[in-house]
Amino acid sequence: MKVLVTGAAGFIGAALSHALLDRGDEVVGVDNLNDYYDVTLKEARLARLAARPGFTAERADIADRGAMAGVFARHRPRRVVNLAAQPGVRYSLENPDAYVDANLVGFANVLEGCRRHGVEHLVFASSSSVYGANTRLPFSVHHNVDHPVSLYAATKKAGELMAHAYSHLYGLPTTGLRFFTVYGPWGRPDMAYFIFTRKILAGEPIDVFNHGRCRRDFTYIDDIVEGVVRVLDRVPAPDPSWNGDDPDPGTSAAPYRIYNIGNSTPVDLMRFIGLIEERLGRRAEMRLLPLQKGDVPETFADTTDLERDVGFKAATPVEEGIARFVDWYLDYYGPGTAG
Image 1: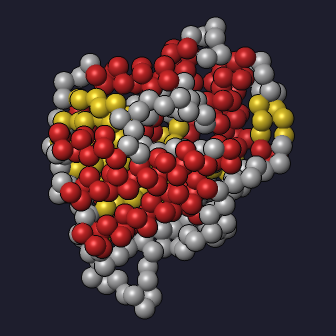
Image 2: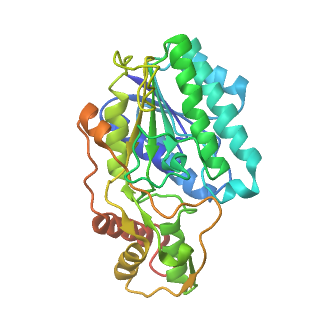
Image 3: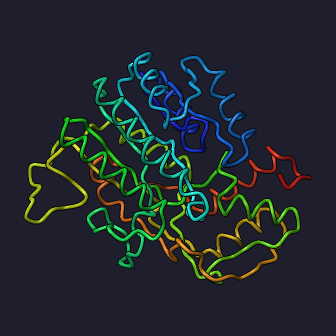
């Protein structure tokens, strides 16, 4: 089938597009190749996709209403995966407009395109950041998430609400996926594991927040992609047991679902850094710093609903995932460079 993937030059978007092409789908990849991080890496991801039959690239900004209307009208996809977004918690403290444009205006344009062209199923990226001030672990989609601690998190929660409204009003089937700290080859240079690797190779100190007392549910890219594909193939239906007197945030009387997609095995940040050091054969010089504004000390995904509904559970251990990432990094940038 024809699948529209926004953010196709991004980390998850490129990996997902390859997986869809591998199984014979036609992929229309939308990306504006912005300079939030190294554009040459995005171009390299896109070049690998462009060489494959069945892939069509559309350079467009999802916040451009006219451009997105044109993309939907030209291609008329059966299903859509919206991965385009302005990511990053700390950057949202400095440049809030980017989050409003991409995560709110842009997502509204995607929703409108899906509504107007009868898309069968929209899968969209949310984030573990929506859990915000929640401290009850593991995080469950059935928990209330009304206390975000960053603008990024607030825009992702807003996206979930917008999708639900379209599902309720227009019967558009939508599924949101709360990603938990995705890592792996071809990853994002703004992510901690990427920065750690670069700085360790360069002999520069790394910033370790909350004095290293953090735990993250690191999730390997191949696991994320398999989960997204399985969810894409399962079009949600209304939950007949949903009750407005006791509303469950994880389901709905509309054709809408929300899932956590994580490894369900939190890893101590210091252990994570140690794995990078081991694979590089170098020690890190660390600057221990307080917890940053907008960050949370721990994430832990309850993936019970995802396992039940699509039969998927992440399986890549962090030791294996980090080894693959470091090997890719050294191969891509060269063993004598810090990238």
